[in-house]
Amino acid sequence: MNKNVKIIIGAIAVLFIAYVIYNVYNTAKDGTESFGNFDTNSTANKHIKVELLKEKGITPSAGGGASFFVKDRAGIIKKVTIEKELPPGFENAVNITLMGHLHGDYFHATEITLE
Image (cartoon, rainbow, N blue to C red; front, top):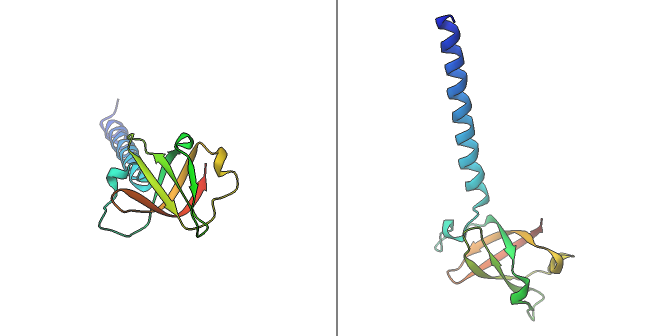
């Protein structure tokens, strides 16, 4: 094989590996799949995909919102509060995406998306 062909194939392989590493890193970071990745001192809202723990119950609040429990992919369980109405079909959801921020012992959600 020609030396130039080997260089081109090597360059393509390096670029492909760099592309895969970049996508894996950014996909995990964008989803912030663990509560451990949240800064409790920040009120910046971020997304997190979690499992709804229906067996722990869903408690409606007087102001129209609710509280419930979820588990992240690392197994961390957190109480979630939201001041809005829950989306239709919420009670039947298994996985949900939350938008909000962490307050140490609970997660304050501003939006809920059903998976």
